[in-house]
Image 1 (cartoon, rainbow, N blue to C red):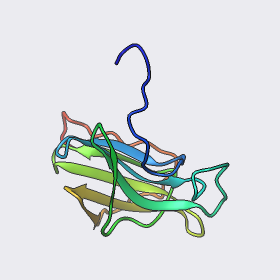
Image 2 (image 1 turned 90 degrees about the vertical axis):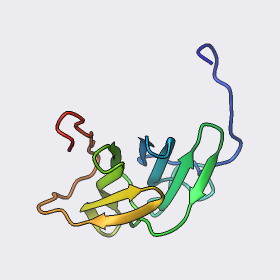
Image 3 (image 1 turned 120 degrees about the horizontal axis):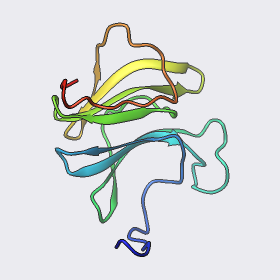
Image 4 (image 1 turned 120 degrees about the vertical axis):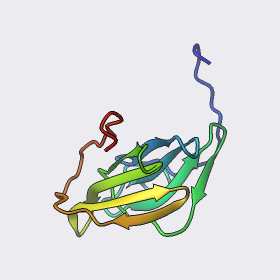
Length: 135
């Protein structure tokens, strides 16, 4: 409320770190994808607890959204792409695979892989949509 923090949700995704968060202006929701953490939400994350789930926050509650999604990863980033009216997720780190160089988009609630030439393998990076250049 501008003065004090108030807990507004009692349930939602398990505790995690290194997930991707972005505001989807078309859906008017915050979207979270992936990350690492303990599968039961307690304690430090074991090295193999990497998530590939998608959650939406509407300002009142978290909702897990099913369907096809990128493979599990952490150290990942995404941003809203106003030209495509959806989210774009790039790279990240997957245990056993290392740094990833794939690109995914999410329009509405549907994820799809994007063919992008020469995308480097990236982890721990940031992506920002350039509104002036629409890219």
